[in-house]
Length: 87
Image (cartoon, rainbow, N blue to C red):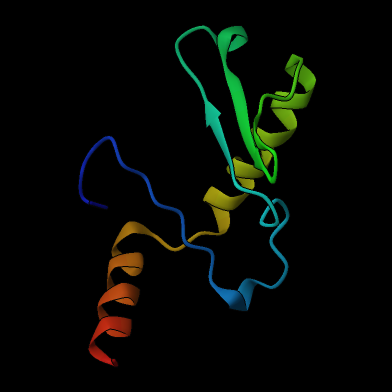
């Protein structure tokens, strides 16, 4: 799946330490018109859609940060392959 063009998996290794935004699952939905982007955050009560551009920008800033520290796609596949082989 990680080799499909529409799929992007971010894996942040434990060696990075605390990862801001890792306590909650969320999805940033972006498109050609930035103001129409939205965020879906998962909670114990179901999906939530934080309101406002500023609130959505905070979530998307977390994604930008995670992209910078995440393993590269190749390193991610090597990590998964090594984990599977060690089982």
